[in-house]
Length: 325
Image (cartoon, rainbow, N blue to C red):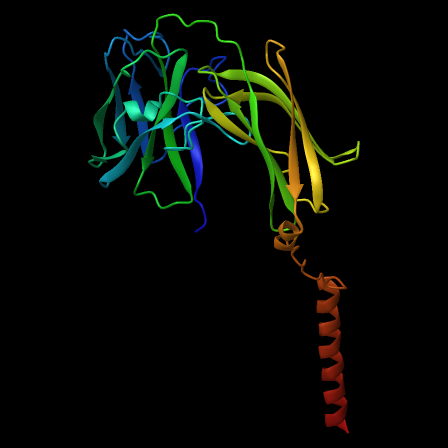
């Protein structure tokens, strides 16, 4: 099944740690979502939820869904853990993504399961979600988002409203040093070649912004890189994976042993160097079968039309002479 494209519409204050995922809010032709931010939260002026989860206390997260259509609509409401997208920005569009080993508390487990909310035509409904505090204290932050989508929308450009949730166990956060791990590097067959990936992990319960990453792929015994990928400002979600595509377009590479060398620099100039081996097998190359391009016409279309018209004129003239004779 062809995956539906989504147009992501975010709610939130544009600030240094959330701006890659929360642009200015835009309007949907069919519905709107209005967060109701409590004046007692940690950042009362923000348009996202910034709550304190401590001492076993829970937090109520309220918002209104406005149905702008003339029919009853059904909306899916889900709390999603923040992840890092392949383009290196925060994302709130996946529910129950793969868990990194460093993740001790999942914000999705503290919230209700995804639910369907029914809203009458041209009316609004207030939704309240309870975010429970974990049984044990946690360092840093838990980051997620409330995603609302229209289940009755069958278009290929679905709208999703997302309001970010930032939860912490203490009013002030301790200083958390940036860390980065390269968990794996691998290649896989694509339609016309091979794609190489480097899988990183941010093991810290903090957003790691403005991280520069350079990855180079070398064939064993060679000093010249066959692939190079540079990203200048990667933002990694807390306790999240980041799978970097070293080459976006598939490339025909020879079978053999390779190594990937990575240099990453954090905003505070902390620098990491990683090296991993990558194997490209003959079987993998057999799976990557190049497509045969369509053969272009050997002459322009207008020339063919002209020749066809000339043929009709000659045929008509020949018929006229035959009748005269």
